[in-house]
Image (tube, rainbow, N blue to C red; front, side):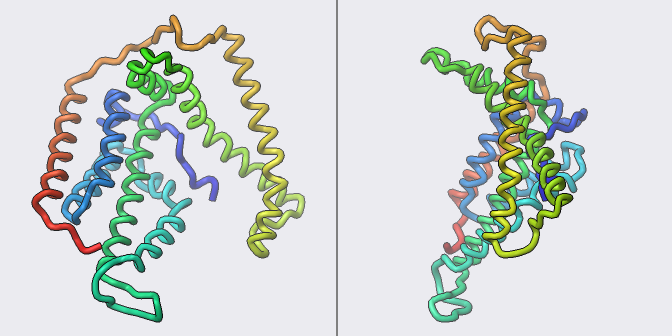
Length: 271
């Protein structure tokens, strides 16, 4: 199951999405997140969903890797959708005691399911197509106006990127520890939930020790390279918006305008 979590991984490539400026990708990700949750009817929702799937295909990364990342949380997504089935207005289609299924509940479940899946996919696109170095530089560049308020922009961007970068490493380390515990006779797949939690505790201690060791080694390596924060630092590559970036921004602006117009002129489903 842990091997199915691919967040934080980077897959080099030469697709259109790979060649976009990382600042543009980060800005569009935030815009997509906002507009995914700003869809109030099926037309605008499907417009965003199809756009997300189109972006996924444009990355030229195997689609199975994207759905592999969904596999680890699909149970939570389905459970959330099922809960929303029973929270809606309108005449009940089916009822058993106080539990009732309505058209509004079905609409809620569909919206929640498609929104969460789209959110995960579009977020995964960013990490799959942007290297940690590019992501750090983009975040620092976009947050640079906060330097006026003495906000440690470079340090925050560096910490967030390091945390994202070490997610695959820690997951791999966790899987190795679990396999080692199973080889010693530990049973983590059987028994009640309480028993499984207790069986997982011996995994947390070595994982915590390993995390601190890696953090100490990384800090030592940064000190050996005379790292002292963002002040006075320069970049090997500077960012420049290309024609492709402007075209992408224009297309997304048209898409977002379509979502806004559909929300205004098309009726919202019963919720």
